[in-house]
Image 1 (cartoon, one colour):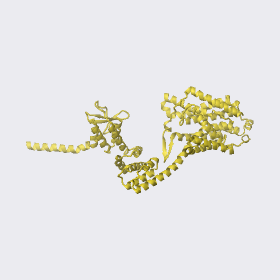
Image 2 (tube, one colour):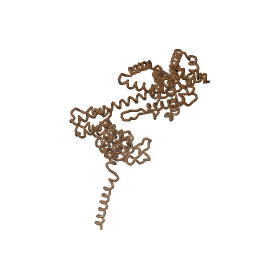
Image 3 (cartoon, one colour):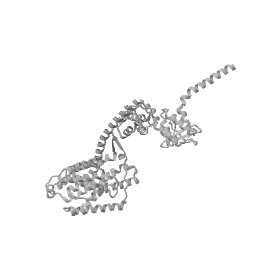
Image 4 (cartoon, helix red, strand yellow):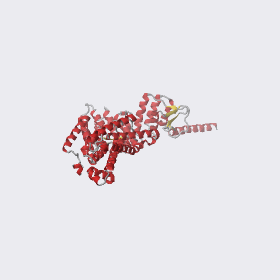
Length: 537
């Protein structure tokens, strides 16, 4: 009886052992064991754990390694458990991701040394290649492309087998090509394929990588590299022309925005307003004041600061323009030299007033989030602040055109521009039109200052940077003609940006000035001359 019981007991124990042996892999495995190694407080164990976790393919691997890099991975030696402290301060189990009510008192951050930090960074880069976020995968592939490491090749090849998104797949192929070109033992066929991937990428990085290939390459590789370099150079030359054209449009929009108010006052009133640049400066300082108030009192509204500053800049600069016209300009009509000297002196007074109030140093005006950063179209790089300024300039131009064409003030302004005496005899109050026109031109200069504050230094000398260019645009395009101002601004912007790489910034400005002088000798009224009895007289 006792032997029977003993036999049954042995069978029962053996069954327990077998059950435990089959159930343990379900409860624990290499990944779970590796996570537990963090509780040993050993640099060697931590390095081994990082390697196992990074190659496990477990969905929790990225969260654990990134938490380790940021110092948010906590290990408890007593319970042999590992925790992650999330960005919002919550605690979760590292293996399961489940929430944890409280952190054990003996838990502490897993330590890293300099060697481990490099290992963690490399592991995190490899894990990002397998991230569920396509943008993260592309960024990781770009990082590998710029710093090719043969250790990433298996990860990239594994990712290529499952990748479905074409843009991400191209990034992986380019990263793989960069690694293969660095390998000394890569086959000739693999290197030719890698060169083809570089050729399809076609940017400066690809060109530098192909140009850096040694002269000891097989003939087929050398021929493929030479053809790819020639093709990339031709493509980059075309993209360079497109990039310069965009720079020209961007500069032309800035010139148009600065000059469009001057085109109105100069065209309607015949006033050479040397203080126009200071109206631009005032608009920029209004933006600065608005942002300072928002920063100190309403920080949540910072992204709307320019929307708030635009009408305020228009009203402040426009009101100052009306005051200037009523107190100074109206006594100097018909005397262009005195008007020029008076407005030049006024510009010095306004600059000194701003220096006294705000100080002589540059003031910081920030970019809202929607005007920050850039994006690429092929090899064309476009910054959001410049793009928005181009859009804003087009909007201002067409709103102003609509105002001149469809409002009573616009009709009166056009009548005074074409024949002041006839307009006065028809009952138009030319003095009122003059004041409102000067205020309108100054107000537009003010909102130009809001836009220019996003791409230039806000200082008392801001307006002086644009006054000469503004006069060149107005005279070249045709005094008082907004379409002429548009064409003149874009033409000068394009010419300047295409001449700069050849002659330099200073010589380009001089060449453009000389060309405008020669052009005015042939067409004194500019590209688009206004028609009317008084204009033609």
